[in-house]
View 1: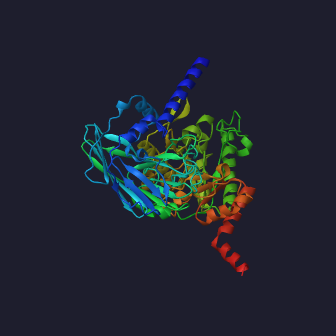
View 2: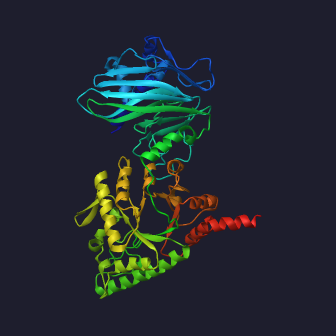
View 3: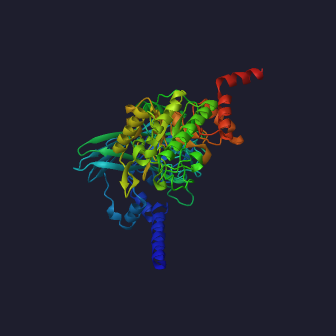
Length: 584
């Protein structure tokens, strides 16, 4: 093992050293490339005009680029249009210069670049609109195979300092985008650097101290990315990359991209308001839920219970439950319905709109919780069907008590299938189409049996990130009268749902700013069982005023529940009127 580790480290060091050589400005390859460049640039902006945007188009791309006298290209080669290479591909090309397959062709127009490849052709026409560079990119696939994904490096910019910025994506847990506060490329791992239009507005914002820019897909058709830095120590040079998808054989597709400049501190919406509107038009906001009162969380079982006669780990009677005989089941029924009565009182006192029960199936198999399939209640927790000579099973009467009090009810569901393996439920991964079908079926069951309209959707992440937003669009289309609350999120989820964001775990105090830029009516469900902390009080009051819903433990009176009530009282319009009157 020590020899293996040493060899691996040597290989990694060698690759890193080669990569650094490839990307360094002093590379022999770069010098040779610059000597062999063909002269004859097309001038799109007078060099005498120092302020504002100035750039010159050459044979292979941009020969120069500046904004307000700040040069942003370290060399003409940095402005070249070319296919984006991985670090390993760049190293290979350095070792084997003849491996590149690009062939340039003469420009027919002074502002257009043409690149030819064995599979087809790329053309880019540059234009200028005020402080915006426009790039019309045509990709022709003349091969017999589809181009599923094609990444193009538009240019590589060199900034005067480490820039801040990123996409409008807040990440799977909602604690990302509040503004360009992250150093570029240094955001948490749960926040993708790629702005994929399937998930988020295809826009990357960069603030570099002396100015700001947005890299945008103007027609919201391609993904945009400002990935790793190419000067690893200084971290000031970054390629600007687009990724174009689904170009079928014999087809030419057009992608319109822009680079929009503004002064330091310029807001995203000021530079790219039209792109935000275009995205919202393509993926319109369709969540129709007007009740923003708090929601109570109900947990009927827990891992802390370990009683042989109570395998589902029910917490009622402090876990002292025996479901192995009818007498014990009757006692369980009475205890559960008493819990429901007490919870109704708590929810009414706090002013909640309703509750969500996480575990009506119990928690017998701890590694699989939460199961998220209400259809399995009869098989996983048969005592929930006990009637004790009554007309209704205990689980039906449990939900009915809340509905009779005018409260909404809900359950936890999951987008994965469940297979019984050796008598234990095991979650099975599902693709997007199957996940949508699973959710639709589980919602339909819970609606029909218990009248559920609130659905916490657990485990909405895959190995590659959050579920595709199209899953939630399909579910919302099928069930427009429910509130979906996904555990994880991407920005576009907010068009169809109110994702769960945790104040108690991640200190998230509002719906991410990026989501509200696109969808002003977007809102989150904020998990706050302990209420607020003094330093976050005003932020949570503001969140409630803007429509965010607070989630609290709904089965007992607590200091946290009282804080939730006070937050809503302070956030109410009547409270604002009274406060203004007292200050006059």
